[in-house]
Length: 248
Image 1: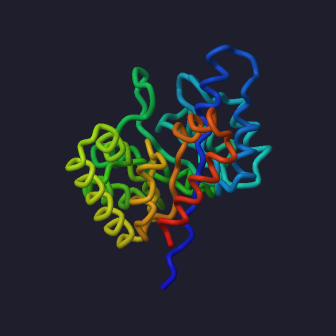
Image 2: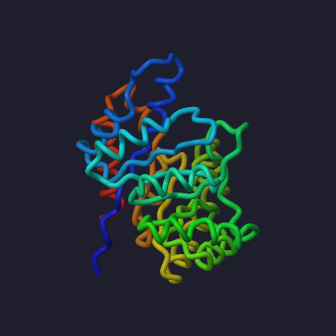
């Protein structure tokens, strides 16, 4: 049986971070998204945070108008974000945890503890035709809860695995990888589509890309950083090559 194509979603949030550091219009995240699409990205991910620290409402408007690949709209489970998503009806929405003091999204969403609220929150998004994804740790309890509330997709948080690799803690790295392997298979057995992302680099992507149940990787900060040195198109092309190599 052939393994399905592994999609690459490129997160362009941190192009907006650089723009906002100085103000003005450059660099333009919409231009980055178009370049990513031309370089082989299967989709574009953008997180509209409540504090608007990087992506803005105008960026979402521009992305919806400019892209021919799907937009994955990351958002917190708030009334404001739900209204924005229902207005735009992007291909996909990914519900993520969000704390104002964090630098970036840290950890997975606590679904089991907020099952009833999240079930009601995502129902209108599904009815509007959005594919609903939940960003969670590789934890059986959270996966079962995501399935019960009606999510179509889970995105496994790869940050702990990537951090352990960067710190040289290979025992923890291997434990995290094995947990993701097991939980990818478990989620797939429930009928959930499995995605993964957060902190992935050239050094860490291949073991995750090799999981046959994983259908999409969402990668952003590393690619935007690497683009400073080699350009966005070559940076994405190398990630695409590594993903395809692992999949083969």
